[in-house]
Amino acid sequence: METYIDSGDFYAERHVPEPMGQAHWHDHIELNLLLAGGMTYLFNGTRISIGANRVHLFWAAVPHQVIAVEPTADLICVYLPFADFLALPVADAFKSGVMDGRFATVAAPDPIDPLLFQRWAAEWPEGSALRQQILREEVGLRVKRLSLDAVAPDAPADATPCEIETAEEAPRLANAGRRAIARVQAMTDHINAHFGEPVTVEAVAAAGGLHPTNAMAVFKRVLGMTIAQYIRRQRLSRAMMMLVDTDLSIAEVAFGCGYGSLSQFYEEFQRHCRSTPRQYRLKFRR
Image (spheres, rainbow, N blue to C red):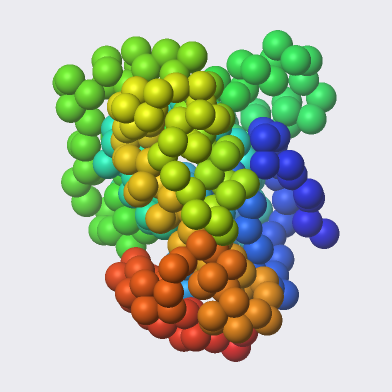
């Protein structure tokens, strides 16, 4: 039985995973740690197998489905709200890579991770507000460390981490400020609510209480991408969800997600997903 989690909620749980009857999605950054066993995801139309004691991270707004589970599997899931992820001072390349649908892990297990994840899963349901805030901060720190050590799931054990943070970038991100982050969250909320309509920079800026020029600068500083790039990614992620969750025609999905033409939708979809919308839908319906 799946636990419903609101997009703004943080949550940590331990459970025995089971194959899913269909793909699902939710607007969190999800961290997985298997204490034992293994399992396989169909993630963004690609099979990804994960093993025990390695942290795996992905943007759960990308349709994903557990399709195979070893009998001994013991899983801890942590759901970090997307707004919390936005606020983290991590490098642009890591943040945009996750939002592009990349599945990130570490080259080798860290002995402290099983202890950390077990504590989070045990303490979160019963913890006080202060303890829960500490847990959220601990998870944020673990994501920051992962951003320095991240490799692809199929990387060899001796893979070199992608050290994508620069000496100049970390202080810049850390100094983005809560006010700027709150404005960007308001702007992304506006985009998320209106992605199926024509979305202008002026309207997005107004949602954040900023002049368009200032809005574009603040958005890029906090999120590491332009407003236009975020709109394109949001439309694409929603299109992927609709292809999986509904029986709407390809044209209905395209226009419902704000694309101006079918050709624009096909071009964008094939560039990012390396398949046609129909092929992508069929991967989740076999």
